[in-house]
Image 1 (cartoon, rainbow, N blue to C red):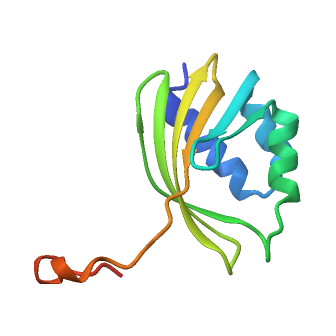
Image 2: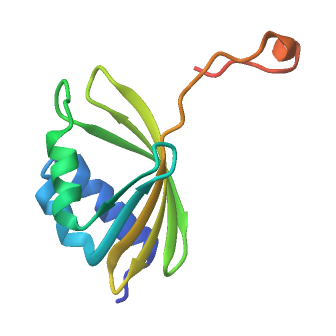
Image 3: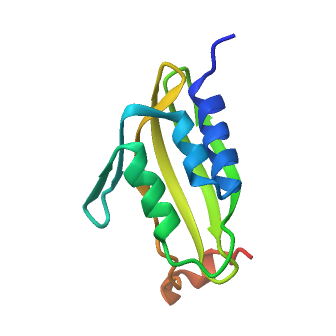
Length: 127
């Protein structure tokens, strides 16, 4: 049975949840690239991906909560909540897969902000 991009991305996040970032490299293609457009950074290769995650100054184990993954045979998008028990973030990640592995991720880390007061009468606040 052939894995879809959604299957591969689910496996990626399951491996990330283990906090064994070297294990995540098993689902990365040889020409893997991760891009963070907001900071204009690019990470090439599984080795650098592993090091970036392992060297990030965390307050504890990383926990990844998948909110949603959508996609097709080759491409998928995930919406994932991420915390180390102090930092709380959300990542929207666009995945390109090839031969059962992740070739490319373009990832956005949106910053939460307080809504403008001028629309308070039109919206309800979410928890």
